[in-house]
Image (cartoon, rainbow, N blue to C red; front, top):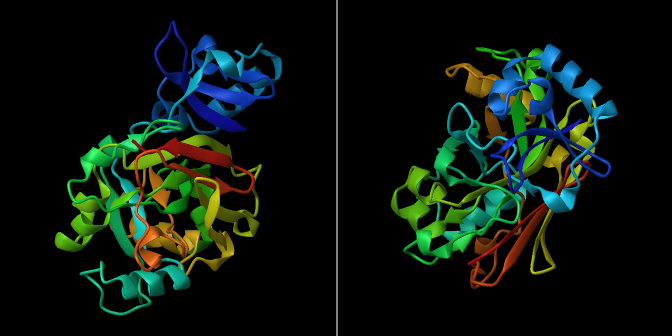
Amino acid sequence: MRLVTFSDSSTPSRTGVLVEGGVVDLTEVGLPADMADFIRLGEAGLETAAEVATRAAPIPLNLVRIHAPVPRPPKNVMCVGRNYRDHAAEFSRSGFDASERSVLPEHPVIFTKATTSIIGPDEPIVLANDPTGTVDYEGELGVVIGREGRRIPQAEAFGHVLGFTIVNDVTARDLQSRHVQWFIGKSPDTFCPMGPAIVTTDELPDISASWLRTHVNGELRQEAPISSLIFDIPSLIHTISETTLLEPGDVIATGTPAGAGIGFDPPRFLAAGDRVEVSVDGIGILGNPVT
C-alpha cells in the first residue's frame, strides 16, 4: 500500500491510501486521522486499510492536498550523517564538518531534526529561516518504523519496519559547522520535506535495489543505489534501538550520496526560485520549491 496524509477544502488532514484515481479516506471507516496513531494499530489497521482501499471510491487527486506522510513523528526525525562513501569524502573536503574525526566513520553518525522542520510535497523550503544563506539539499531514503522495539537485533530489524518514504535533509551549512553537533543547522522550519507516501515493505521487498536521485531545476545532482549505504538499514535500526525505544511512526533518514551543493567548487547553495526533486525507485518523487 501507499499510505498518505492528506486534506481537502472541507476537512482537516487525515490518513488515506493512494490508489489509481485518487485517495481513499481511511477515517471513513473509523481509522485514526493521525498517521502515527494509525501505525500503532499494527497488522489489524493495515488489513482494514487494504480492504477499504479495494472497495471505496477514491477522492480525485486534483481535489486533495498531500502532506508529509508522518507530519509529527513520536520523536525527532533520526538522521545518519556521512553514510555514503563519496559524500563522506566531499563533506570532508568542504570544511563544513567541524565534528569530523575521520573521513569514513567507524560507527553510524546519528543526529536529529526537529519535528517542526517537517513539510510535505510542494510546500516551500524557506531560505529566510537560515540567516547565513548557505541552504543545501540532501536527498535521502526514509525508513518508517511500524513496530516498537528496543535493542533490536539486525536479523530482526526489517520486522520493525512499516515501509519507506523520501526525506530531503535540507541543511544550513554554516550553522551546521558553527554549532558542531548539527541540530541547529539541520532543524530550521521547512528544512525537512518528506513524502509523498509511505510505501509498505511488501511492495518494496528489496529496497537495496532501488536508486536515489536528486534533481535541482531539472539537473541531476545526486544518484546512487541504496545498496551503497555504508551502514545498512538493519545496522542503523540496531544502533539506534540500543539506547532509544523505537516507536510506531518514528522516521529514520538513512543518509545522502555525493552531489550535495557543498560538493561543488564553489558550493552551489539553493536560491529563491529553485525547485528540488528527490526520487527513490518504487516510492515516487518528492518535489519542493525554494522561496
